[in-house]
Image (tube, rainbow, N blue to C red; front, side, top):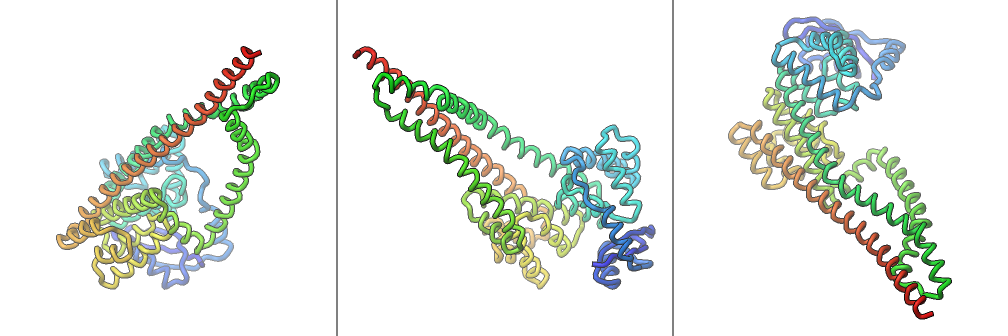
Length: 409
């Protein structure tokens, strides 16, 4: 797609310059208009200039991750939200005076992009490891409504909630994983150090192998022979799945299949609906119209199948269908959630409706994750106990058998 250089004025009369990609000049003008910009000039960029620009704008591999994003947005919220400073001046100040080297470097790069006429949202898109789609779309909405302070507060809340959820999952799984590792160590010690000696002693004494010892032999053969074969089969399956998901049909079919997996599918659905609802509530609260809100909210959905349904939902709403009916029609919400949106439509309070929807699915997501982690932890503990019990019983019975053989002789 060709690139075009432009000079345009924003709604406050400030002149800016930049480069955008579009099929033609008319399409470029339409894109600028959607960004609340009035074009003064639009000129095609030569191929060499376009290649040079693409090389300069290649996304960075790393920009600090979530920690840096949270630190930067908190500073921007203080300077732009509470202090009323323009975002470009705030980034310039941070690029010069921030004590965090990662924040300082990122602020310098973002300020450079803004100086070239880019929006903050498009500048953030260069760092997908630090700012995900939900954050950039919120910033895009904040820029279009001149309400970045409110948006920065929502981004901070979003990142902190995500960190809490991750910490909950980690803490719930840490103890079972530790016990499984300890049990595996004990089993390996029994299997490769003690078991050969016991079998040798039993053979010399003429004692028969008991059932636990036979089970230990089976487990040992499975670990030595079966485990590598299993790992190779899993690796081949994962590689094949990776390449299959590179295709559009493969990506959608696998995402649709994941939604049907018990427990996991519900977690994925809750996660996407929660993200979409919170984003929609924030965008509506920022004064963004319905069409633009749903266009931005669609991009926050990770599951391809849900995104396809949401695209159909957007088309239906643009054609005049009620929001609640369209959400139910394309299987995005259940009947109870649809009632919440329906009430919001009738009362003209979609901000509250989608806010309640996001909160409900957030609680559902946390509950399902707690149940899943508890079940997984219980299974891990039971499996570890069974292994250790089997090997300990085998050793004890073997020692008793050897004792009886010695006494008999």
